[in-house]
Amino acid sequence: MGKQYQKEIEQILQGAESKPTSKKAGGKASGNANKEVSSFIAHRRLFKLFLLASLGLLLLSFIGSAFLPSLIVKILIVIASITFLLSYGGLLVSINTKPNR
Image (cartoon, rainbow, N blue to C red; front, side, top):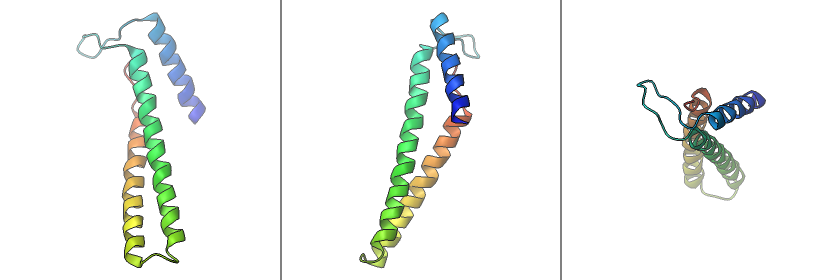
């Protein structure tokens, strides 16, 4: 699945090299397509980073449940769960929406 997206991004980059600007729906030319693709990739990396951080925080809370007070563990679990859900949702949205060509 990841290779498919990588191939699509490479195709977008190759198309961007041949065309200096891309057209939007209104017929107006947008900025550089390479910049849009790099922004797209940066957002995906950021969401993946938050996803891993939330999983690490969840693991830390489960390990810390042996010696931390239960209130702190519950707060860590809530923060990790909210961060996980938001970053996972953002990652899904960024995967399903492709940058403008």
